[in-house]
Length: 295
Image 1 (cartoon, rainbow, N blue to C red):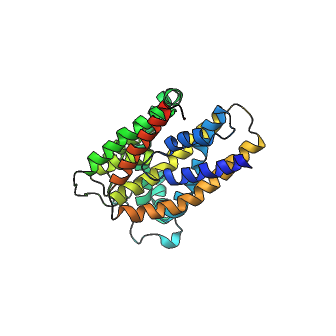
Image 2: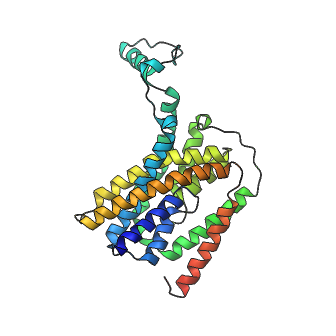
Image 3: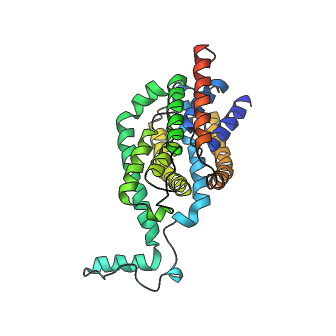
């Protein structure tokens, strides 16, 4: 029972920190040390990634109307989306299908998401094991929390005019550059949402647009990471481990529903400076506790 309570707390932490620019993985590592659930190190690594699926489902539920690319013929546009009819019968059939059943602007959005996903995929394949071995520890997490906290303060100290206010206006080049920022989040303590939002702000995206695009990027990023972790887990899951994963995902899902709504309302009126200061203070506390051998 005590272990389940710890899983619920970790699910709450995941649901809160996944969407705030403060590093969910870093918080799970730190609070995992404090709560100390009776998991093996191998299962802990899987748990910290797979419970993010609950947060993904929350994004899908909240934004399904913006990302689902298909519709019924009744919603087909009066005019073709394509400027010129293809000469090939096969291509013409594809054009006809797209005009009748597809929101092409959402297909293009998904293509941009795929482009953004390329840099973190490459870096993850090359370096994730090394990062997991050397950086999934309190002190490296604390250092990265502090570094990115100062980056937030520096970026937010300069006023920028938002040139891109909707995800539809993001270019493929901007999508790729944002993907490079997302790749940095493989290092725990960086924050996937934080690094991509910073990248978006530097490229001229408004805060709501940058946050929303970050939510969309989470879908392939977290789903892919979860599949890889599950496929690489060599031991058989015990009943308690399966229950822990399910409970953690459900809690993360419910908390994420609330946090995403609140965050979108918050960033319309506020900057991210508060999150920068939070990261710095937390990082210092962790380093002090580590020096005192409390964690």
